[in-house]
Length: 394
Image 1 (cartoon, one colour):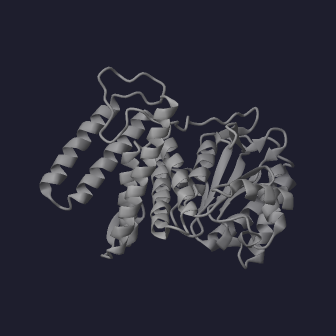
Image 2: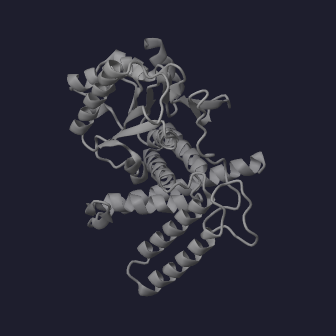
Image 3: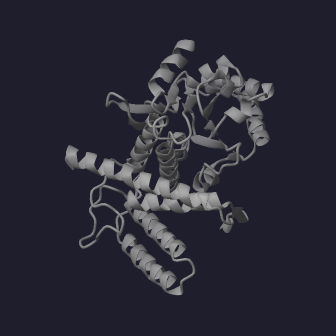
Protein backbone atom coordinates (compact mmCIF):
# COMPACT_ATOMS: atom_id res chain seq x y z
CA UNK A 1 0.00 0.00 0.00
CA UNK A 2 1.36 3.44 -0.91
CA UNK A 3 1.72 6.22 1.66
CA UNK A 4 -1.16 8.13 0.04
CA UNK A 5 -3.43 5.08 0.17
CA UNK A 6 -2.42 4.37 3.76
CA UNK A 7 -3.18 7.95 4.81
CA UNK A 8 -6.47 7.93 2.89
CA UNK A 9 -7.54 4.79 4.73
CA UNK A 10 -6.55 6.31 8.09
CA UNK A 11 -8.62 9.43 7.36
CA UNK A 12 -11.59 7.27 6.35
CA UNK A 13 -11.23 5.23 9.56
CA UNK A 14 -11.40 8.36 11.70
CA UNK A 15 -14.44 9.55 9.74
CA UNK A 16 -16.21 6.23 10.37
CA UNK A 17 -15.37 6.35 14.07
CA UNK A 18 -16.51 10.00 14.34
CA UNK A 19 -19.80 9.18 12.64
CA UNK A 20 -20.58 6.32 15.02
CA UNK A 21 -19.38 8.37 18.00
CA UNK A 22 -21.90 11.09 17.15
CA UNK A 23 -24.69 8.59 16.52
CA UNK A 24 -23.89 6.86 19.81
CA UNK A 25 -24.24 10.10 21.79
CA UNK A 26 -27.62 10.80 20.15
CA UNK A 27 -28.88 7.30 20.94
CA UNK A 28 -27.62 7.53 24.51
CA UNK A 29 -29.55 10.78 24.97
CA UNK A 30 -32.76 9.08 23.82
CA UNK A 31 -33.08 7.44 27.20
CA UNK A 32 -34.89 4.12 27.18
CA UNK A 33 -34.73 1.08 29.35
CA UNK A 34 -31.76 -1.15 29.95
CA UNK A 35 -31.33 -4.64 28.64
CA UNK A 36 -30.65 -7.96 30.33
CA UNK A 37 -27.83 -9.94 28.78
CA UNK A 38 -26.29 -13.29 29.62
CA UNK A 39 -22.76 -13.40 31.04
CA UNK A 40 -20.50 -16.10 32.40
CA UNK A 41 -21.85 -15.36 35.88
CA UNK A 42 -25.52 -15.27 34.88
CA UNK A 43 -27.95 -12.61 33.63
CA UNK A 44 -26.83 -9.01 34.05
CA UNK A 45 -28.78 -5.80 33.51
CA UNK A 46 -27.03 -3.26 31.32
CA UNK A 47 -28.00 0.39 31.26
CA UNK A 48 -29.41 1.90 28.08
CA UNK A 49 -26.18 3.88 27.56
CA UNK A 50 -23.99 0.79 28.01
CA UNK A 51 -26.10 -1.20 25.55
CA UNK A 52 -25.91 1.59 22.95
CA UNK A 53 -22.14 1.86 23.35
CA UNK A 54 -21.66 -1.89 22.90
CA UNK A 55 -23.66 -1.88 19.66
CA UNK A 56 -21.83 1.16 18.26
CA UNK A 57 -18.44 -0.30 19.21
CA UNK A 58 -19.41 -3.27 17.04
CA UNK A 59 -20.29 -0.89 14.20
CA UNK A 60 -16.80 0.64 14.49
CA UNK A 61 -15.21 -2.81 14.66
CA UNK A 62 -16.97 -3.81 11.41
CA UNK A 63 -16.17 -0.55 9.61
CA UNK A 64 -12.45 -0.92 10.45
CA UNK A 65 -12.28 -4.61 9.58
CA UNK A 66 -11.58 -5.79 13.17
CA UNK A 67 -7.99 -4.65 12.58
CA UNK A 68 -6.24 -3.89 15.87
CA UNK A 69 -3.70 -1.52 14.29
CA UNK A 70 -6.38 0.51 12.51
CA UNK A 71 -8.59 0.67 15.60
CA UNK A 72 -5.76 1.87 17.83
CA UNK A 73 -4.59 4.44 15.27
CA UNK A 74 -8.11 5.79 14.76
CA UNK A 75 -8.69 5.89 18.52
CA UNK A 76 -5.56 7.94 19.10
CA UNK A 77 -6.47 10.34 16.27
CA UNK A 78 -9.99 10.79 17.63
CA UNK A 79 -8.65 11.47 21.12
CA UNK A 80 -6.17 14.06 19.85
CA UNK A 81 -8.90 15.78 17.84
CA UNK A 82 -11.26 15.79 20.81
CA UNK A 83 -8.63 17.61 22.87
CA UNK A 84 -7.76 20.03 20.05
CA UNK A 85 -11.35 21.21 19.38
CA UNK A 86 -12.61 21.16 22.96
CA UNK A 87 -12.81 24.94 23.33
CA UNK A 88 -14.04 25.97 19.87
CA UNK A 89 -16.34 23.02 19.07
CA UNK A 90 -17.40 21.31 22.31
CA UNK A 91 -20.12 19.18 20.67
CA UNK A 92 -17.66 17.91 18.06
CA UNK A 93 -15.15 17.27 20.83
CA UNK A 94 -17.66 15.06 22.68
CA UNK A 95 -18.35 13.08 19.50
CA UNK A 96 -14.63 12.48 18.90
CA UNK A 97 -14.13 11.51 22.55
CA UNK A 98 -16.95 8.97 22.31
CA UNK A 99 -15.43 7.73 19.03
CA UNK A 100 -12.11 7.16 20.84
CA UNK A 101 -13.97 5.18 23.52
CA UNK A 102 -15.68 3.06 20.87
CA UNK A 103 -12.34 2.34 19.16
CA UNK A 104 -10.88 1.24 22.50
CA UNK A 105 -13.87 -1.02 23.18
CA UNK A 106 -13.56 -2.55 19.72
CA UNK A 107 -9.80 -3.06 20.17
CA UNK A 108 -10.46 -4.94 23.42
CA UNK A 109 -12.89 -7.20 21.55
CA UNK A 110 -10.20 -7.99 18.97
CA UNK A 111 -7.62 -8.89 21.65
CA UNK A 112 -10.16 -10.90 23.67
CA UNK A 113 -11.12 -12.92 20.58
CA UNK A 114 -7.49 -13.72 19.80
CA UNK A 115 -7.99 -11.93 16.47
CA UNK A 116 -5.03 -9.54 16.66
CA UNK A 117 -2.77 -11.82 14.62
CA UNK A 118 -5.09 -14.64 13.55
CA UNK A 119 -6.90 -14.15 10.22
CA UNK A 120 -9.42 -16.90 10.90
CA UNK A 121 -10.30 -15.47 14.30
CA UNK A 122 -10.58 -11.97 12.80
CA UNK A 123 -13.08 -13.12 10.20
CA UNK A 124 -15.05 -15.08 12.79
CA UNK A 125 -15.21 -11.97 14.97
CA UNK A 126 -16.38 -9.85 12.04
CA UNK A 127 -19.04 -12.41 11.14
CA UNK A 128 -20.40 -12.56 14.67
CA UNK A 129 -20.39 -8.75 15.00
CA UNK A 130 -22.23 -8.34 11.69
CA UNK A 131 -24.81 -10.92 12.80
CA UNK A 132 -25.34 -9.26 16.18
CA UNK A 133 -25.73 -5.77 14.74
CA UNK A 134 -28.06 -6.98 11.97
CA UNK A 135 -30.35 -8.58 14.53
CA UNK A 136 -30.11 -5.55 16.85
CA UNK A 137 -31.00 -3.03 14.14
CA UNK A 138 -33.74 -5.30 12.81
CA UNK A 139 -35.22 -5.70 16.30
CA UNK A 140 -37.31 -8.90 16.41
CA UNK A 141 -38.16 -9.04 12.70
CA UNK A 142 -38.06 -12.82 11.98
CA UNK A 143 -36.99 -12.27 8.36
CA UNK A 144 -34.04 -10.09 9.41
CA UNK A 145 -33.00 -12.57 12.10
CA UNK A 146 -33.19 -15.53 9.71
CA UNK A 147 -31.22 -13.74 6.98
CA UNK A 148 -28.56 -12.70 9.54
CA UNK A 149 -28.31 -16.30 10.75
CA UNK A 150 -27.70 -17.60 7.20
CA UNK A 151 -25.05 -14.92 6.55
CA UNK A 152 -23.33 -15.82 9.84
CA UNK A 153 -23.27 -19.54 9.02
CA UNK A 154 -21.84 -18.85 5.56
CA UNK A 155 -19.18 -16.48 6.92
CA UNK A 156 -18.11 -18.91 9.65
CA UNK A 157 -17.84 -21.74 7.13
CA UNK A 158 -15.59 -19.56 4.98
CA UNK A 159 -13.47 -18.57 7.97
CA UNK A 160 -12.80 -22.20 8.86
CA UNK A 161 -11.12 -22.71 5.48
CA UNK A 162 -8.51 -20.03 6.25
CA UNK A 163 -5.03 -20.52 7.74
CA UNK A 164 -4.76 -20.00 11.49
CA UNK A 165 -2.09 -17.31 11.39
CA UNK A 166 -1.33 -14.24 9.36
CA UNK A 167 1.34 -14.53 6.70
CA UNK A 168 0.14 -17.87 5.31
CA UNK A 169 -1.47 -17.83 1.88
CA UNK A 170 -5.25 -17.67 1.71
CA UNK A 171 -6.87 -20.61 -0.06
CA UNK A 172 -7.79 -19.85 -3.67
CA UNK A 173 -11.15 -18.23 -4.08
CA UNK A 174 -11.58 -16.81 -0.56
CA UNK A 175 -12.88 -13.25 -0.33
CA UNK A 176 -12.89 -10.74 2.52
CA UNK A 177 -16.12 -10.66 4.56
CA UNK A 178 -18.55 -7.80 4.13
CA UNK A 179 -17.38 -4.68 5.88
CA UNK A 180 -13.69 -5.58 5.72
CA UNK A 181 -11.31 -3.56 3.57
CA UNK A 182 -9.19 -5.32 0.98
CA UNK A 183 -6.27 -3.16 2.22
CA UNK A 184 -5.43 -3.19 5.89
CA UNK A 185 -3.11 -1.10 7.98
CA UNK A 186 -0.33 -2.39 10.25
CA UNK A 187 -1.36 -5.31 12.45
CA UNK A 188 -0.24 -6.43 15.86
CA UNK A 189 2.15 -9.25 14.80
CA UNK A 190 1.49 -11.61 17.70
CA UNK A 191 3.78 -12.35 20.66
CA UNK A 192 7.26 -10.85 20.28
CA UNK A 193 8.70 -11.53 23.74
CA UNK A 194 12.42 -12.33 23.56
CA UNK A 195 13.71 -14.33 26.54
CA UNK A 196 17.27 -13.19 25.83
CA UNK A 197 16.36 -9.53 26.41
CA UNK A 198 13.21 -9.89 28.52
CA UNK A 199 11.28 -7.45 26.40
CA UNK A 200 8.62 -7.34 23.68
CA UNK A 201 7.45 -4.78 21.16
CA UNK A 202 4.52 -2.50 21.96
CA UNK A 203 4.53 -0.24 18.90
CA UNK A 204 6.49 2.58 17.35
CA UNK A 205 7.91 5.61 19.14
CA UNK A 206 7.47 9.26 18.18
CA UNK A 207 10.63 9.20 16.04
CA UNK A 208 9.62 5.99 14.26
CA UNK A 209 11.84 3.72 16.35
CA UNK A 210 10.46 0.43 17.80
CA UNK A 211 9.05 0.82 21.32
CA UNK A 212 9.47 -2.03 23.81
CA UNK A 213 8.11 -3.15 27.18
CA UNK A 214 10.61 -4.76 29.57
CA UNK A 215 8.78 -7.65 31.27
CA UNK A 216 11.93 -8.75 33.06
CA UNK A 217 15.67 -8.10 32.94
CA UNK A 218 17.51 -11.43 32.58
CA UNK A 219 19.74 -12.11 35.55
CA UNK A 220 18.11 -9.30 37.56
CA UNK A 221 14.37 -9.83 37.97
CA UNK A 222 10.89 -8.61 37.04
CA UNK A 223 10.20 -5.02 36.01
CA UNK A 224 7.36 -2.70 37.09
CA UNK A 225 5.48 -0.39 34.76
CA UNK A 226 3.18 2.61 34.46
CA UNK A 227 0.67 3.44 31.70
CA UNK A 228 -1.13 6.75 32.16
CA UNK A 229 -3.46 8.94 30.15
CA UNK A 230 -6.95 10.42 30.05
CA UNK A 231 -10.07 8.40 29.19
CA UNK A 232 -9.97 7.28 25.57
CA UNK A 233 -6.20 7.56 25.22
CA UNK A 234 -5.75 3.77 24.86
CA UNK A 235 -4.51 2.72 28.32
CA UNK A 236 -6.61 -0.45 28.49
CA UNK A 237 -5.62 -1.60 25.00
CA UNK A 238 -1.95 -0.96 25.80
CA UNK A 239 -2.21 -2.93 29.06
CA UNK A 240 -3.93 -5.81 27.24
CA UNK A 241 -0.94 -6.06 24.87
CA UNK A 242 1.45 -6.40 27.83
CA UNK A 243 -0.77 -8.96 29.56
CA UNK A 244 -1.22 -10.94 26.35
CA UNK A 245 2.55 -11.22 25.91
CA UNK A 246 2.98 -12.46 29.49
CA UNK A 247 0.06 -14.89 29.24
CA UNK A 248 1.70 -16.60 26.25
CA UNK A 249 4.75 -17.58 28.31
CA UNK A 250 4.82 -20.38 30.94
CA UNK A 251 7.36 -18.52 33.06
CA UNK A 252 4.94 -15.70 33.91
CA UNK A 253 1.86 -15.70 36.12
CA UNK A 254 -0.90 -13.07 35.92
CA UNK A 255 -2.61 -11.48 38.90
CA UNK A 256 -5.28 -9.13 37.54
CA UNK A 257 -7.15 -6.39 39.39
CA UNK A 258 -10.07 -4.36 38.05
CA UNK A 259 -10.94 -2.45 41.25
CA UNK A 260 -13.63 -0.27 39.65
CA UNK A 261 -15.44 -3.35 38.35
CA UNK A 262 -15.50 -1.97 34.77
CA UNK A 263 -14.82 -5.39 33.22
CA UNK A 264 -12.03 -3.75 31.25
CA UNK A 265 -10.02 -6.98 31.25
CA UNK A 266 -11.58 -9.61 28.93
CA UNK A 267 -12.58 -13.07 30.10
CA UNK A 268 -9.89 -15.00 28.17
CA UNK A 269 -7.23 -13.14 30.17
CA UNK A 270 -9.02 -13.25 33.50
CA UNK A 271 -9.64 -16.96 32.91
CA UNK A 272 -5.91 -17.49 32.39
CA UNK A 273 -4.98 -15.49 35.50
CA UNK A 274 -3.90 -17.22 38.70
CA UNK A 275 -5.57 -14.51 40.84
CA UNK A 276 -8.18 -11.83 40.10
CA UNK A 277 -9.74 -8.94 42.00
CA UNK A 278 -12.93 -7.08 41.09
CA UNK A 279 -13.16 -4.56 43.95
CA UNK A 280 -10.88 -2.09 45.67
CA UNK A 281 -10.64 -4.23 48.80
CA UNK A 282 -9.85 -7.37 46.81
CA UNK A 283 -7.10 -5.40 45.07
CA UNK A 284 -5.60 -4.43 48.41
CA UNK A 285 -5.75 -8.11 49.38
CA UNK A 286 -3.80 -8.99 46.20
CA UNK A 287 -1.14 -6.41 47.10
CA UNK A 288 -0.93 -7.84 50.60
CA UNK A 289 -0.51 -11.36 49.19
CA UNK A 290 2.15 -10.14 46.74
CA UNK A 291 4.16 -8.76 49.66
CA UNK A 292 3.68 -12.15 51.33
CA UNK A 293 5.08 -13.95 48.28
CA UNK A 294 8.11 -11.64 48.30
CA UNK A 295 8.75 -12.39 51.98
CA UNK A 296 8.30 -16.14 51.52
CA UNK A 297 10.62 -16.29 48.51
CA UNK A 298 13.23 -14.24 50.35
CA UNK A 299 13.06 -16.66 53.28
CA UNK A 300 12.85 -19.98 51.44
CA UNK A 301 14.59 -19.36 48.13
CA UNK A 302 16.40 -16.07 47.89
CA UNK A 303 16.42 -13.84 44.79
CA UNK A 304 14.66 -14.98 41.61
CA UNK A 305 16.71 -13.30 38.87
CA UNK A 306 15.04 -15.29 36.08
CA UNK A 307 11.44 -16.55 36.15
CA UNK A 308 10.75 -20.22 35.38
CA UNK A 309 7.55 -22.28 35.09
CA UNK A 310 8.29 -23.71 38.55
CA UNK A 311 9.03 -20.30 40.07
CA UNK A 312 7.14 -17.90 37.79
CA UNK A 313 7.45 -14.18 37.56
CA UNK A 314 4.24 -12.69 38.97
CA UNK A 315 2.82 -9.73 37.05
CA UNK A 316 0.25 -7.93 39.21
CA UNK A 317 -1.71 -5.58 36.92
CA UNK A 318 -4.04 -2.94 38.35
CA UNK A 319 -6.45 -1.32 35.89
CA UNK A 320 -6.93 2.29 37.14
CA UNK A 321 -4.90 2.44 40.34
CA UNK A 322 -6.01 5.91 41.49
CA UNK A 323 -9.09 4.75 43.48
CA UNK A 324 -7.00 2.04 45.17
CA UNK A 325 -4.31 4.35 46.54
CA UNK A 326 -6.39 7.48 47.19
CA UNK A 327 -6.77 7.98 50.95
CA UNK A 328 -5.49 4.47 51.69
CA UNK A 329 -2.03 4.54 53.31
CA UNK A 330 -1.96 0.74 53.69
CA UNK A 331 -2.55 0.08 49.98
CA UNK A 332 0.09 2.68 49.09
CA UNK A 333 2.61 1.21 51.54
CA UNK A 334 2.06 -2.32 50.17
CA UNK A 335 2.53 -1.12 46.59
CA UNK A 336 5.68 0.78 47.58
CA UNK A 337 7.08 -2.46 48.98
CA UNK A 338 6.31 -4.38 45.78
CA UNK A 339 7.95 -1.82 43.46
CA UNK A 340 10.95 -1.37 45.78
CA UNK A 341 12.02 -5.00 46.28
CA UNK A 342 9.55 -7.24 44.45
CA UNK A 343 11.46 -7.40 41.17
CA UNK A 344 14.42 -9.21 42.76
CA UNK A 345 12.04 -11.92 43.96
CA UNK A 346 10.03 -12.27 40.76
CA UNK A 347 7.08 -9.98 41.57
CA UNK A 348 6.23 -6.83 39.58
CA UNK A 349 3.43 -4.28 39.68
CA UNK A 350 1.97 -2.70 36.51
CA UNK A 351 -0.70 -0.02 36.81
CA UNK A 352 -2.76 2.29 34.64
CA UNK A 353 -3.65 5.75 35.91
CA UNK A 354 -5.68 8.70 34.57
CA UNK A 355 -2.64 10.97 34.91
CA UNK A 356 0.83 11.14 36.45
CA UNK A 357 -0.15 13.42 39.33
CA UNK A 358 0.87 12.22 42.79
CA UNK A 359 -2.78 12.01 43.83
CA UNK A 360 -3.16 8.95 41.58
CA UNK A 361 -0.45 7.22 43.65
CA UNK A 362 -1.65 8.04 47.14
CA UNK A 363 0.66 11.04 47.28
CA UNK A 364 3.69 8.74 47.12
CA UNK A 365 6.55 9.91 44.94
CA UNK A 366 8.35 6.63 45.72
CA UNK A 367 5.46 4.59 44.30
CA UNK A 368 5.19 6.65 41.12
CA UNK A 369 8.95 6.60 40.58
CA UNK A 370 9.16 2.86 41.23
CA UNK A 371 6.40 2.11 38.74
CA UNK A 372 7.84 4.38 36.05
CA UNK A 373 11.55 3.61 36.43
CA UNK A 374 11.81 1.03 33.61
CA UNK A 375 8.47 1.08 31.79
CA UNK A 376 6.72 4.45 31.59
CA UNK A 377 4.20 5.09 28.81
CA UNK A 378 2.15 8.30 29.15
CA UNK A 379 -0.45 8.32 26.35
CA UNK A 380 -2.21 11.21 24.65
CA UNK A 381 -1.07 14.55 23.25
CA UNK A 382 0.84 15.51 26.42
CA UNK A 383 2.63 12.16 26.72
CA UNK A 384 6.14 13.41 25.93
CA UNK A 385 5.89 16.29 28.41
CA UNK A 386 4.47 13.99 31.10
CA UNK A 387 7.28 11.48 30.57
CA UNK A 388 9.90 14.23 30.96
CA UNK A 389 8.27 15.51 34.16
CA UNK A 390 7.98 12.07 35.73
CA UNK A 391 11.60 11.17 35.01
CA UNK A 392 12.85 14.54 36.19
CA UNK A 393 10.86 14.21 39.44
CA UNK A 394 12.20 10.68 39.95
